[in-house]
Every structure is written in structure tokens, then in C-alpha cells.
Image (cartoon, rainbow over all chains, first blue to last red; front, top):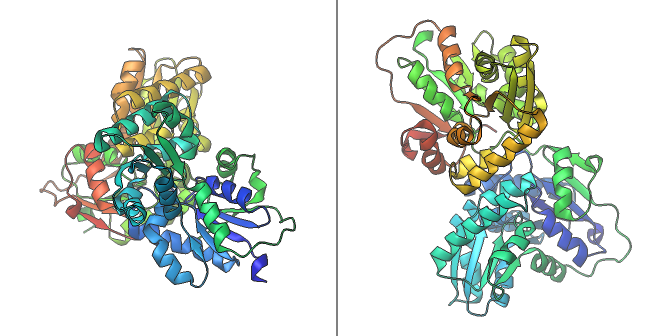
Length: 268
Length: 268
């Protein structure tokens, strides 16, 4: 039965666990199969062609195991590979995080002055500009590559002086480029853990949005109502470093992970 | 003629260019072929088995193109894969950076209290402890994973407040774990650009060593005297992101690079 299959979710590593967390809350009757491509992370400093190839391999692994929907819980992969993944896996529903993030930004923004912090690859793609302008053509969108947050998140340095100075430096760069924003989009699934720093550094009337909640809502809207029996345990796959994945990933998912519950897979 | 072949050098990305720079100075009559595995960097957060596989693929690509010596200009790959690479490519000389780094540390250390900043994978391997103890059994070696420097170097943030605070935090961790050192080893080829910060933060009588110079000396000692005709242009290969490789790599090599002089290769 198609309805009994899990929802497949993938990311370059652990950042997508912030999206999985929102999915688990929004869709409590569903089963999930998560894949983190930790052997090749980060995606955000790589070219579109390479990210596209990696995303196809990750998606194929999940599809091979039987899923009813594919969630690309990575902004870089969504920006580089979503049309290709949709064509390749049709008629399977494939949901990215950029369009939901853009929708959240447009809903939150009063004056249409939107700033995006993302990876180098996502910024280069122009995907947020395109998705926001499709909803609000007069929006002024300024995107800044904030690469270092990925490493800070992977290191677990999500608060403290280094994270604060890094946030200040990127926000200053964004302010200089934009002349001021009324909404900040966290355009990378590694960035939500830094939300308290952005909140502290930005004016109180500046909205901050990430795509986790709106992505979960989009997935719920696209699927027929799930059976409401208790789902089985969460299944996690990673291409490398299960111990590290469990240790750092627990912070992103919101509860502790055991390396024994993660299966190693090889995509190459 | 074997002597006319280039020396092959590889790293996960651009860090190994600090070693290439020392090699170019020490061996001005030689030709070099450098490969940066930028599609899969960093290696330092990955497991030994994965790094070993990547190193074998990188080495094989260089050997296939014809080299007379292989230099593993990456501490993580040296710590995980050197014995395997030596067996696999025998009788080709294969030179890593850990043993030269350990030799430099032992030569510089007066009291044998040696601190190592390296990647997570290099620290986990215990390779520096082993190599230093082989030369000086009574040395006290303390190794700390300083993962974030790789991302800072790749971002080009090698000075300024964030780099300074990061250096202070890792050195404080090292001081707390060791009780004080007389020699610091930069156990990752991404770290030499931070040398001025370490110099500023450490006592003046603490030596700081990296393995670039001693690795170049070891390669020179292992090879017959090179022909002293002018070598051809430097050949560079990368698995992804040629524009980025040229832009950031130029700082590591010490002179500007043109993306057009870098060839893209696929190792997978």
C-alpha cells in the first residue's frame, strides 16, 4: 500500500533534521526515512552540477527503498536539483524547501524588503529571488552567502562569542548590501539553531523565518490524510560518521540519537 | 624517462597548496601535478574508511597520469591512508606530512611538551602521538580537534575578530588539556595562514611548526637530483569549483591563480 510507505527526507548532513523535526510534529501519523549524505557534506560550497549528481544519488537510494514522497530538506540541493528530481522521479511528489521559505518570507514581510542568508551555492542560483518575486514582484531581495554557519553548526558552536561575532559580521554585510530589511530568511537548514543570535542582533520589528514549518505544511497538503495508527521507529541513514551524526544531529532533531539506530549506506 | 615525470601532490582541497608552495621553493627544477578533491572536502570530519577510499581514488588519478612520486599533502589522508597508499602504489615513493611534522616538532621542542591542532579525524587516528613518540618516547603530546579553522580558511577569514576568538578558544582548550606546551604543531595544511594569530596568542618562547618545509625536504632527499632545466607550467586538477579553487587557493599558494589553468576531474 502506497499510503503505508514512509516519507523520504534527505540533506547533505544533519541540517535537514530541523525540517524532519517540523515534519514529525506536523504529520504524527507518518513514518519517515531520513538520509544524510555526511560523506560528501557540505553541498553549499560545491557547483550546481555536482550537487545535482549527489541529490540524484541520494533521492534514488530513498526511492529504491520505497517512499511515497521525497522531501529535499536542503536549500542547496533544492536550488540546484528540484526540477531535475521532479522530472526524474515523476509521478512521485518531490517537495523542496525554497518555495515554502519564500512563501513564509512574503507572508511575514510588511515592506517587501527581504534578506536571505544562505550557502554560496544557493545564493549563486538566485532561487530565493525567483521564488519570492513569483509571489511578490516588487519585493527587494538581498542574498548573502553565510558559509561559516554550516561549519559552526556542525561543530556545535551555536552560541557563544564566535557565533555571535560571525552573525554580526554577516548581518552587517547584509545591511550594507540591502540598506535595511524587514524580514530575514534563514535559507539553509543548518541556520535555525542560530535564531536566538539573529533575534538579539536584529531590530524587534524584523521578522525571521525559516522553511521548516512551511515545508511541513506543504507536505501535509500534498498527501492524502495519513493513517493515524502509531508509526514505527524513525529510520535514519547516513553515508559516513554515524557516531558524529548521532552526537551533533541530536541537537538539530531536539532529542538524543543513538548511533545504533543509524544505518550506513554508500551512494557512490 | 621517470625523472622527467612530475611530482604528484594531493589534498582534500586547497590546504595542500601550502605544501606545494614549499615544494616549489625546495625543488625549483621539478614539475608538479596538484589535485584538490574539492567535490568531497573536507576530509577531516569523515571516517578513516571513507578518507582511505577517497585517498586511493585521488592517488590513482595522479598515478594514471604518470608521476614519479606521490605527496599526500593532507594530514587527515596521511593519518588514515599512508600505509595503504604505500602498499598499493609500491615501488612509487609516497610521502605524507605527519612524519615530517612530527620531526619538525621534536627538533623544535626543548621540553617535549608538544601540542597538536588538527582535524577531528587526525586527532582520532593518534598519528601524531605515534610519530612523535617514535622519535622521542618521553614527549607529552596533547592533540585538539580544531575543525573550524578549515571552514575559516576556505571562507578566507584568516584574520580579524572571528579568527582571533576561534584561535583563542582552541588554544585555551589545548592549554587546559595539556597544562602548557613549548611547541605547537599545525597538524592540518589549512592552518598555516593562521600562524600570525597563534604567534600573537602564544608565549614568545613557544615554537610553532608546520609540516610544509620538512615535507619538502623529505621529498628532496628521497628523489635523485632533478634535471635543472626550466620546468613547464604548474598543472592543477580539482574535482569541483574551479573558480572558487582559484580565488581562495591563490592565498594559500602565495600568488594569483587563473581558473583557466585548473582542469576539472571526476574521481567517483
